[in-house]
Length: 335
Image (cartoon, rainbow, N blue to C red):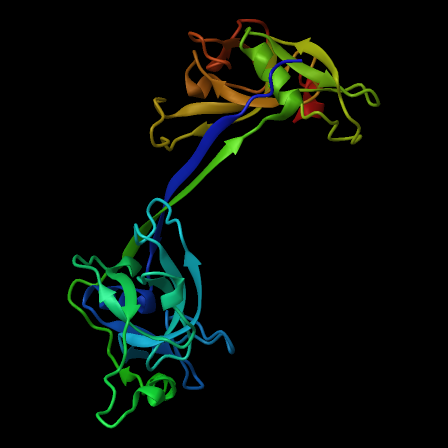
């Protein structure tokens, strides 16, 4: 039994989107140290704003400015900030209902510890020193207490503070035209997922064989089909598969597509062909790149073989073998 393999895997890509008039005004306003919400048909002010009323589904565009102060509605303490989170020191995730708004905004609160955070506490925005028109223009929230009256006793400060928070939350939002110089019209959000991949016993055996330039599959004890790459269970019958069998290395192109967009970081010139290949002896087509031939000469039924480079654990691509094309009837069930 080969060693069960594990490997770190990262999936990342930039997500680019254009902004409509509401989101554009909201993000541009943050750059200008202003917070805009949108007013619904029933008069509520939503922050962050949306483009359609969540109750009626009507389009809404009436913008309103709310205050940079607000009230914490709920929170959770984060004792160990992760990479690229807003603060490097422990902080609280908070939902803050800004004064004049009827919904809460998710952000972070800079506080010395969980003992300093409570639902109902008053907070205000700490703006980022450099602002570009993004939610990170709000650097964080920080604790903030309204100035108490001169005649307020220490015993009554807590209750008075709660009253002020309730009163502040009902301050009306001011109408705003949403017009700014150089409005933000699009954003790019990096998406990234880091995890550890464990292929399991069946795939580990398959990968160990690939390291020896052999391609293996597993045969189902019920339907007798050979699946490549193996899954440890027959996808048709649902029974475990343990019988290994070597397939290929030659195979037949069943279907293919021409790729015209170059992937970031890939050293492959476009256009190129990605194909489903039915290896000899296999009952399931795998996919791989076709090389060694102009993209417009690849065809269904073409016979191909793997090309290994260096000490790679898998073929770099498949190339034509020069054999006559396979008859359609020999691979039509694998389309």
